[in-house]
Image 1 (cartoon, one colour):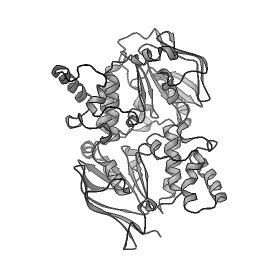
Image 2: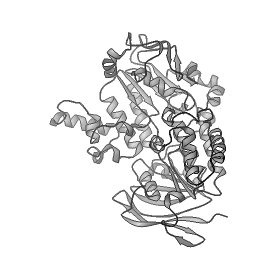
Image 3: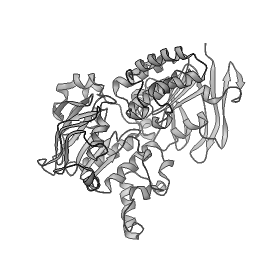
Image 4: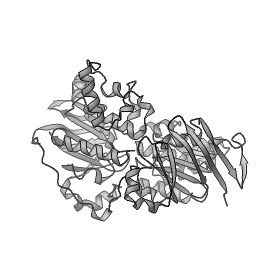
Length: 484
């Protein structure tokens, strides 16, 4: 029986992690939860050696014997899947990524090829072995990185929100792998999802850098505890109802986005119209073409066949700049495209007179309204947590007062309070903006959406009024949409 233990004692890092002590054993799953910015990702990186602690220790024991990281390299013992899988892929193809670690461990090429095919099938990437990881969706990259690391059979695996980009079916596949390996791999799941945390053996909670052992997942029933640690509520899957959407303040009559037999390579084919002020929720499996659809609106992709019109004009290279002033896209991984040195510079990038005292006061009020704390205003965006960066990205998009807002999984990595801020913003925008919102979770959009689109294999296979969503429950479930 495996008997390795990761022992953490008095771990501290700057003012983020404070005297953290706990053990992680092979054969157990531990969930780590807490508010955005509480120190979860920093703690995960300290465990893996990606960051060096100011004090305290992370030690490896086996059968009570202490082993040195020199004789047992940390990278071989502890695998890490971060929030941004794009940064973790190094292979030129999916097959190379899945087989790279195995080849470096001395496995024969023939055996590696067999294992690669098996892994690709297990995580739903069969047929994509020769594709570059850069062509995959965020969810597909998460599956790729997780499978590649599991193949190395580490003693410990740390998942930092590594299941967030996945549709329900893809998540189930990865969970099946993780649970299958539970006996051999100690797992730490950093998550905001209470449904995932319920699968763990025990729960760690962190706030302002201080960690507590909370006990078993049954403690999630404690409403005060959830509130104190920013844990969102779990909903009854059988009682999800369409909430009454408030009336739009702007009649949705004039077409604003028109795809006329538009083809975007093999990734997307579209023949649809969206009208001013509509809220379109876009759902479907990972890799179905949802992000490509959003990218088409701002001309990151132009159709190879057919035409795409926005504001009544065919989108071409010559009018791209003008169109982009009226549209804003918030991506899945906002940290990938920030350009401001501080949060303030990022949100108000290009704004004239932003150092003027009156303008500055108005700007600060805007930031606070969107959940950006006073101590974050002049911090570098890359120093924030994933959820905090998500808030910054949305604030930066909204401050330009766009007419069309494109949101690609905007609640990824957000704690309970962060999700409530996004919902409040959506309420304020209804009818004033045309909104396209990509998600895997129908609960996020049911209150706000006018229409629901199901995208599969690059096609919109279902377009229904939001109030009729339950008539197509089987379609959503079959496509892996979460009904939570």
